Image 1 (cartoon, rainbow, N blue to C red):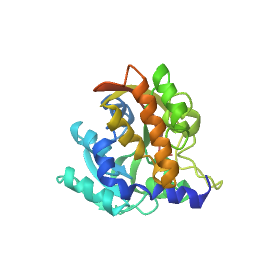
Image 2: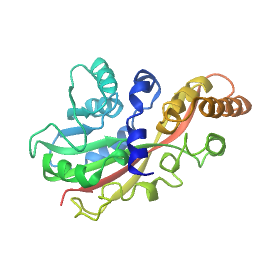
Image 3: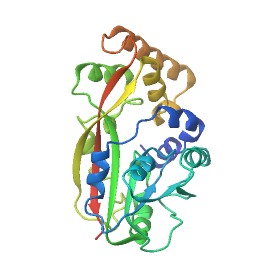
Image 4: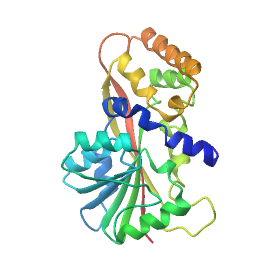
Length: 259
């Protein structure tokens, strides 16, 4: 994905902010605890916070959270759902916080959108000494047969390499590194996966998939054809054809320490 395409995808979510807030999953608590385990203190920045899915988990775990999000519509949803959280407009490349003001920076399904040549120094600036940067990704567990079938039917625009445990580690192992050859600001990555799940119906799973960036930027006719294939597949499977089911998931975490 080139820079223009990356920016197009990254800026696509605002148009679906309400649906994103309703349908996207939260994050496994064990994954967030592991991400924060080495942090030198409780102050956490949720960077690229979206509608607050990760923010809410951090609040539930007792962290001192500040949320930063560039999209106005997403930020509005976050403030509506979490009015007690300090939520600021800003981006990974321009963080509106003082130097050394947080102990950890977490990014839920967002780090792959950051321009780390610019964002890396900004994140390092706001981190306290020995601070932690962690990216979290919610993965559909394609080791389960029907989920693997769903991924095949959906295509990479809907369920891509970062979205399944088969390939997420390779896809995200360098997410903390600048792509320009600039000096890295963080040490060697650690990666781990944690069981997770989400109660869905066939209809709500289709709505969830429709909030993915690849779907949001897809031409309308192609988008409707893709969602139609997914509906047909879900209607054909005994696991998903009737009522609610548990979507098998994992939360994958990439964790690095500031150099």
